[in-house]
Each structure stands twice: as structure tokens, then as C-alpha cells.
Image (cartoon, rainbow, N blue to C red; front, side, top):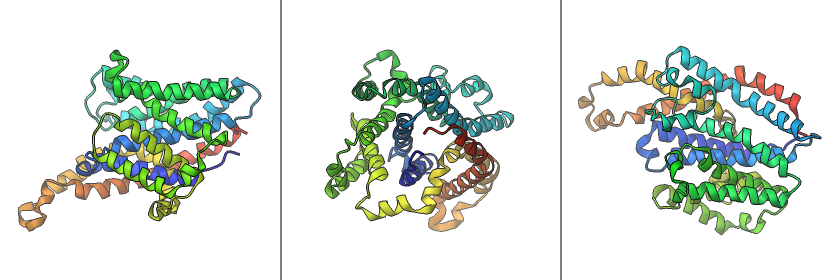
Length: 353
């Protein structure tokens, strides 16, 4: 049975909170690069966990291991994703019917660019497409090379180098328009997670480095400074910080107790567990709740009579953020309990070891 890293779910809570901060509190989230970093942190987590599962798979043949992995991923990802796409198609959510083929085939991330699709509530689905493309491709690399650890390590490092080189330097000029949404570049963060998995399973983690209190505070300081500043290597530095957080959460304790306590908090862990549903539903929910409930109500308020609070007329996100976040969690809770869990129980038929 693969180990469950409970604090990784706490880390997922941080990631989904950053995404919600970007989308629902833009005056705070956008200057902090919160949405990008939240998604990038999800990518590093996925790369770490998926690679660990693949390396620990114990079926006798490549085909059996691959099909077993895909079956488990399918049961986790497809049901809620296609349910959401179906519901949004029926409700005629902007952007869904025009791009239904791309949504159904997990190619929406590329359609955003080559069709120049305007911002819609389904735009966050691009990252789900990147992950699914990774899940289809990555097992071929890991399962083919799992008995050749040096070759696998080289492959992972090359993916990281090429991905970040494209992001930072645009080494393939024709692919620059796809730098934000494409698999080639975003696989760099997934590759960092894979690197962490390889190091941990080969007992090559730099324990002294990861346990060092001063290093921890330095990394956290670098992370905060990187989020609030802009420079050429920002994405690479954020990826390295994410890798540190993932490895530290999985195998060690943080000296900074507020962070350690947050990662161990049962509520945070639960929200991290259902973060996939939160991510899928948060923007469509906010679109309908805003359009038909909150905006009509907030637009009728006479803010001029509110004195100093009249500033809320221009900062309605202060009211919307907690409401949208609350309903995002509630919808994801019901989705997880009554729709996702029955499919997740079926995963036991496809044990990896």
C-alpha cells in the first residue's frame, strides 16, 4: 500500500487557497502571483505523488502497470470532470459549447491560445488538461526506465531544464505563445516533483539541508520575496521552493510552528483532500452566484450613505471572497461524499502493490 502523506493534503489546502485568492480577491491575489503559484504547487505535488506511485508499482509487465495506473487516475479524475463539463454544457456556460471538443479531449489548454479564447469561468480547466496529458505520457518514461535509475534521473533533469529554458528564454520561438498553458513548459514543475520522488525513493534526500532551521527560514523568505517581486527566473525559483515544501511536508517537520500546525490541521487536510472539486467548481459557481444573486443585491446598495465603508462599492471582492470560498468548499464537500467517493472506492480493484 502506498504511503499517504497527510501533510501533502495540508499543502494542497495552501495551493487551493492561493487559487481562490487570485480569482476572488484579485487586489491581493494578483500582485502576489497567487494563482500561478497555487497551480504550480499543485503540479509539483502531482509530479511527486504520481512518480512515487509509478516507481512503487509491482505488476509483472509494463502493460499491466500502465493500465493499472491509468485505471486509478481515470477513476479519480474523469467522473467529476466530465460531470462538470456536462452540467456546464446543459447550463450553457460561456465558452463551453463552443469548445466542447477541446474540453472533452483535454486539449483546452492549447485551444485557449490558438483560438484566442477570451477569459471565461472555465479557463482554469487548462491546468487539468496539462495534468491529464502528463498522466498519459509520464508512465511510459517512468515504467520504461524504472530499472535504470540513472537514465530516469537524466530524463527527469532534461525535462526540467527544457521546460524552464522554454519558459525563461523561449528556446523554441514557435512555442512561446504556449509557454503559460503548454505541457512542455508546465511539465518542468511536474518534473521537479518527479525529481523529489526519485531522490526520496533512492534515499538520496539531503537530510541535513532539509532539516536545517536556517535553510527553512531562508526558503520561506525567498518564496515570499519571489511572490511579491518580478524577475527573469521567478518561475524557476518558485518551482524550487515548491519542491522544498513538498519534500519537507512529506518527510520532515517545519520549525516554523504556524506552518507545521496548519499542515497538520484536520480542517486544512480535509479541504486539501477535496481541493480537486473546489478547483473545478469554484469559477462556474462564482459566475452564477455573482450574476444572479450577489451582483443584483450589491448593485442596489446606496454606498454613499455608508460613510467610510462606501469604499466597498469599488471593492466588492471583500464581500464576495468569503462567500464564494464558502460555497466552493460546500459544493466540493457534497461532490466528494456523494459522487467522487463511490468511484474512489473502485480504485482498490487496481492496487499498485
